[in-house]
Length: 140
Image (cartoon, rainbow, N blue to C red):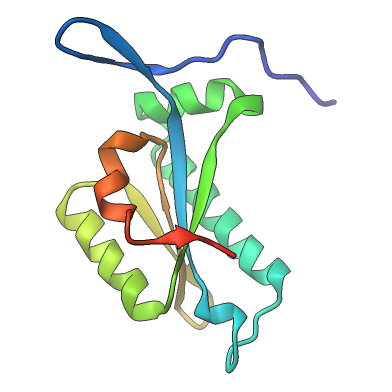
C-alpha cells in the first residue's frame, strides 16, 4: 500500500546574523559520463541503476544524521541533483577531496569488477557543498 507524504516540508534552519533562513536539503550525485560512451557504452538503465545504488547507500549509511532524517520525512519533496564527471579519474579525485573535507558521501563501486561509477552525498544544504561540486555540470 502506498502512503502519501505529509503536507509539511521540513527544512534545516541556519542562523544568520539577524534572522533564521530556511535551507532546503539536496542530495547530490555525481555520475561518470564516460560510461555512457564508447568504449563502455553502458545503457541508460545501467547508469540510472548506479546512481540509485549510490543514493540508497548514502542515505542508509548516514540514516542517523539529522539532515538525512529531515530529508526522508517528506518523501514527496526530496530534491536530488545529478551531475556528471567526465571520467574515473575525476570521480576518484572528487571522492578524495570530499574525504579530506569531511563531506559525508558514498563512492559506489560496481561489482564484481570494482568499477567506480557514482558518488552520492548524504543530504546537505547546498551552500555547504557547492564549492566542491561547482565544476560539474548537470548530467545529460
